[in-house]
Amino acid sequence: MKAVILAAGKGKRLIPITSSRPKPMIPLAGMPLLEHTILGLKDAGIDEILLIVGYKEEIFKDYFGDGRNKFNMKIEYVTQEEQLGTGHAVRYAKDFVKTEPFMLMYGDLLTEPNVFKEIITIFKKSKAQGVIALFKVKNPQDYGVISLNPDGFVENITEKPALELNLGNLINAGIFIFEPLIFEAIEKTEKSVRGEYEFTDSMLILINQFKKKIVGFKINDYFWNDIGLPWQFLDANNYLLDKIEKKILGKIEENVQISGDVFIGEGTMVRSGSFIQGPCYIGNNNIIGPNSLIGAYTFIANDCQVGMGEVSNSIILSNTAIPDFNYIRDTIICENVNLGEEAKFANLRLDKKDIKANVKGQLIDSRRKNLGAIIGPNVKTGINVSIMTGKIIHENSRIGAHTIVSEDIPPNTLYYHDPNKGIIKKSL
Image (cartoon, rainbow, N blue to C red):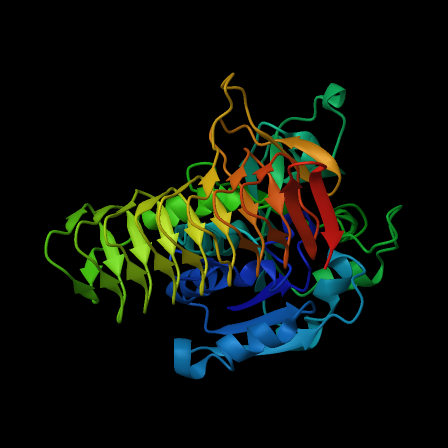
């Protein structure tokens, strides 16, 4: 069976994390999000993949190539020139799919690899024209809600329904198998009120006009995360770190303590006095310590330097410098960030309420008691900077020494505290 992966979007709700690369290419636990998915598909017996790309498509092509050397698979690409919806994107796969059933999935989600094996088995047994994976959530109003009939077949699909409609909490999990007949339904699909060709509308055409059946496959026994909000990268990273195997490839000096499952890559030096608590993944060519505390559920990519201080339950991407006396928990730091000494990231409100963050102009409840900051690529700070909970520092910004950051900082901004004038913000 072939697989088609939709990976053309920009991931606007995840900016600044996605300001420098597509969402499926964000590294988690040692490799891009999409690579975890491709390895799962390979394990399920899929050996041909079509990536439908758009935003920064060269990053996909440079990393995966044709798939033969890295995965012993065949990977092809097609560019979605305009972002006109999921139905419009799937249409690009028609020539690739040809006459056989195919798996379709969104490229920006993470799930357990067994889901791919299970959905293939269900499709083969069902004799239906499609299968859709479903997941129960607490906030169905933010998703496409799927209604099933008593026999387990899809009856209706409602995008972001009002809670008072009480349509249940089974949502479209973004993993499907279809017969090629779905392309005929796509051709009949008209633009929605959002001005897009919605794939969910195509599925309803398959059901209502073509009188075909789509099986609902509930996957709540498995891990699933659509990573639609920045802090969900931390949840996905934690799930992956729970599965790593201990391996030490770097150099460990004397008087270093390592507890639990910890991966340390080639060329990495862990200096004396450091303590590393697994599960934890530290990539290649890093310098850790001396006297660093690297706490559980931390992922440090490549070519980073972490001095004396604490980093826990955080994602630190490549070429980032974290010098001495820094305190970083529940935080995401993108690539090429340079922190000054004594940078502190608050991760808990004094009243211990859930932390909220601004996403695309809307204040969103993270439903987390602990959340630090989201730091975009190429950010630099001076010494003794304090960043309050849930703040987002956008790409290429600079924060002056001895500054308390209690608001989000836009891209390309110089942000500092003047003793006489208060906070000063200037465009760079």
